[in-house]
Image 1 (cartoon, rainbow, N blue to C red):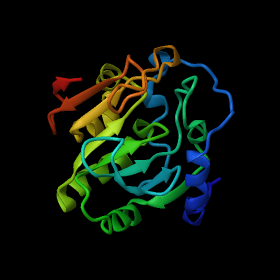
Image 2 (cartoon, helix red, strand yellow; image 1 turned 180 degrees about the vertical axis):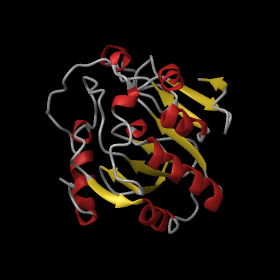
Image 3 (cartoon, one colour; image 1 turned 30 degrees about the vertical axis):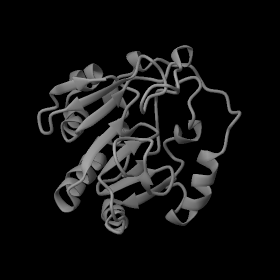
Length: 206
């Protein structure tokens, strides 16, 4: 099943931003092998949960484009976006089409990958990250329910995507540690990690 077509984007955004009463299935990202879930889309494609956003100021520094990926194995209790968990929901779109749409966004300083779990589609995300940096001069951030240490240990495409980033907000959302005063994060266990592009070295932790 290919999921919804790109023409369903507005409805998907409305559904995602609406409050939901769906219960979450508890699981721990600390026990999930990242590589069991990666690269679940055809080459040259990415599966998104909703339309590309622009002028976003809540998912990173400056004015940002935001890309919402579809599919997540972590299923954090209290997740704001449980509709992004299913790997066959959302819609498939070519990376070239994503780039064409992003090229129309003016005044952005960067892009942030949200989800869902971006590290489920690391090859596609890395290609977009590399292209927006080269073509638009944007910086690149990503959220992940996995920790930096898990991603580094997993290696492969997940680690290559991480090395393309300038910042990573890592770790699962933990409802008992919820703290809305944190910058860009939802729970106290999550970290804002500023990274050295191309090496993945942590430069600063917030």
